[in-house]
Length: 205
Ligand SMILES: N[C@@H](CCC(=O)N[C@@H](CS)C(=O)NCC(=O)O)C(=O)O
Image (cartoon, rainbow, N blue to C red; front, side, top):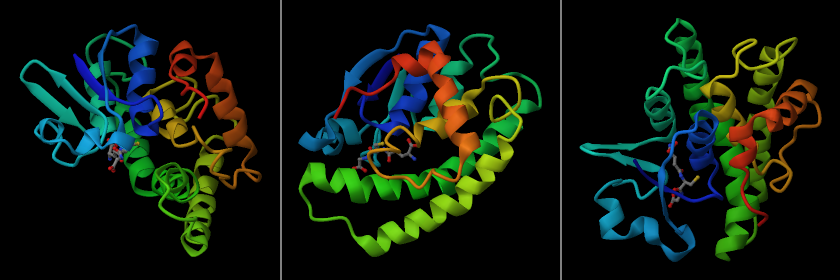
């Protein structure tokens, strides 16, 4: 399976962590966004959004990190993507991450990290304030859901943990307001015990 990715991308990390946790080999094809490789015609032919990640497995070309998580986890029997009704809870968190929690986090990452890297001006403080407010609003939902639980969906590590935690990859750097969220901080630190999560950590920026 060809995996078009970059180790600095939180969305790619969602997938990478799953592959590494399950011992599934992916043929890594590095895409450098800074060089615009994601906008080259050959790449747009497999992902017209010009975004990473993308997975190509024979006839199947798949984009959207959460769909790719499910696809590769379906290659083996495992608890990350169980065949029980827990699946729907996992899908709920994957959708929620894209729409709410991750959207706020990605906004802060863009303003406070990506703009600096691409040299496209200072962080827009009004946008940061809006993203921080959304991060706090939705972070409270996750923090509450984690109360008394080891993982997001209960005692079992699932795709939902890697999906949601990927948003927090640059939490310190992008100054996410996590101070009030003790359950989130405890849970994300505990994921370092998971070999796939550890191995998918990005190199220092
Ligand atoms: N919803 C997509 C989002 C993918 C995405 O935004 N990827 C970022 C890297 S984390 C990207 O490719 N950015 C480059 C761009 O938008 O030009 C997914 O989950 O796969």
